[in-house]
Image 1: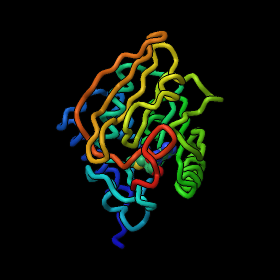
Image 2: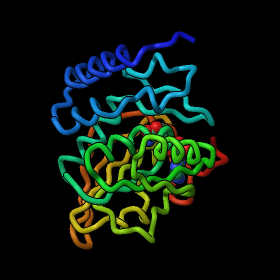
Image 3: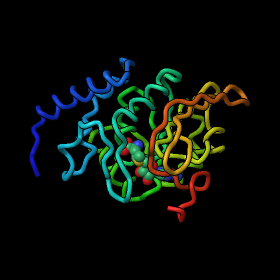
Image 4: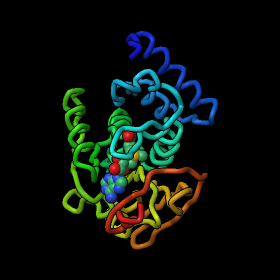
Length: 221
Ligand code: SAM
């Protein structure tokens, strides 16, 4: 494996942020968080020199670390509606999205259904000194004992918005979630207004499936 120095990684990180700007990410807080969090720390050693490309890469167990542009779009949708507070991420994966939310100053909770990924991310957060609460389980059911949340970010593709998650939003809180079929999902934002939920839809993406009681059935994949 080619060893890439810290200085080169830092330069590549700045180039990645420039690419995000060219793709239309303008929120300064979001861009600053992408400058602060070193994406290569969330990669395993075999793919470390790809860390600052704008791509999604395998992290094991059939899962991926999302493309930086996708993470930036979701984060910007959240920050513009819910600038601070308590946020729940569904789908910890590598831990990168949770670390970006932490860099933005949110109080971050994250759930992963695959035990090995949960364990790896929890160890990494602890090594990096990040105060992120990790749980292992079915994130489609949310985290009732910690609700309500000012924001929820779902980083896997859902067939529909899970009711449990909608009801764990605080008033005026919002959920960013890709919703669609197994191949293509529409980025969706659900905002809670009392007992009602407002829905906005944005561009399409392709995510790994959200598998769980209020997501896709495990045995269809
Ligand atoms: N946020 C991740 C990151 O920054 O690396 C992206 C991870 S990947 C695109 C989506 C993750 O969602 C996978 O790790 C997958 O195991 C997880 N996942 C899928 N369904 C889930 C569920 N019901 N509860 C928790 N995690 C789930």
